[in-house]
Length: 215
Image 1: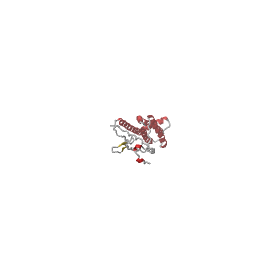
Image 2: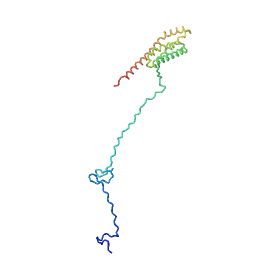
Image 3: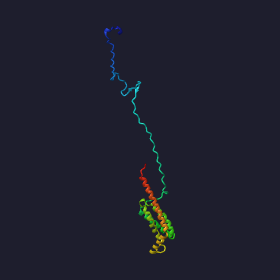
Image 4: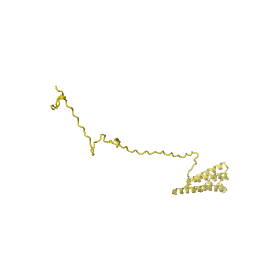
């Protein structure tokens, strides 16, 4: 029996030897326009200049702006209610009613407690004039010097009418009281006029400062 290695080639391959399986053809690499074969890397990755893999550039992040904390606003401490003075604004009619009623009540108290002392009545008349001139609103400031003399005469009726019960006696006592207490009457009217004049000047200056352009 002949050995398969020593068998001449003209007899062909042996039939008892199984044929070797053929290898599948290798796929050809795609070539670009320059003729070079494509890269094995995925299409989203490329090669850097030094031969490494180039990573995609990251988008620029916006710079962080430092946030400033709001400065706390210091509010003035509230004034206690006990320290606040009443600051009403009376009209001309309201100021007249206020001053007249207060002087009438004071006249009755003076007649009942102090024995119709006109001096005490004149002293109490001054603070009432101050309050009337301070509490009247700016639009009716000129009414304050007119109101206070009328209120003085109204409050003087119960004080000056102690000499008799008749109407004539009370009228004569009122005229006598106005004549003898004219100093208190003029003094209270002058105080009210000065306060009104000061408030008037301050109001004019304030309006002029508001209308003046700021440079």
